[in-house]
Amino acid sequence: METASKSSRLRSSKIDHAQLPYTPLLSNISHPRPTRNTVTNAETSGVFCWNIATYALREAVNLTASFSPDSLDEFAIANLAKTPSRIVNNVPMVAASPIRFECEYHSTLRLPGNPPMGSVDVVIGKVVGIHIDEGVLTDGKVDLEKVMPIARCGYFEYVVVRGENVFEMVVPGGKEMLVGLEGSVKGQKAMAGKEGEDGDGEVNSDVAG
Image 1: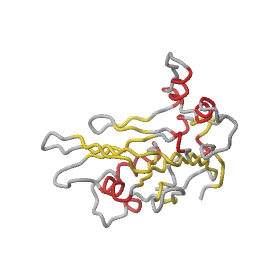
Image 2: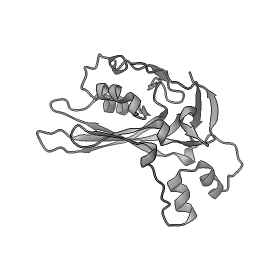
Image 3: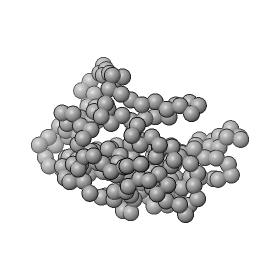
């Protein structure tokens, strides 16, 4: 499967410590294996990367969901090209994924299973770097019609987000709550009295590696 990114432009952002968002990483555990490699790697190294799963990458997503021996490279199994992380060390990212997070490990919550089903590990990470392919932006915002992210539902079914299914609703509330829900770095800095300052939270454009 061809996995090279169609766009050669990437927007990258190192996140200001005051603006650190969090992201969860879910991992299903099956007996007799006590944990999955992804969880073990995040816990032992203290870092991990999250790559958005898209419709174009659906077959690769399915291949990497299998339980494979530690000695096998899942990038090779799924025929995925790697791109290096820029903030955390020695963690490759999926080059064809249009949105990628670099994360510092925070904690793991293990939800007990109901035998014979295994448990579920919820790994929480602090996002310290964000990379967005400019090809999925419209007027500076992530355009889900271009990204076409997928999510796993029940049974063996998945769903894909398409533009005609996206709608917007603004939650009633004060400015502070709305800025937080929107995830606006500029708005948060303005509220903190930092508007106009240069900082690590600013997005800069560079050429993708």
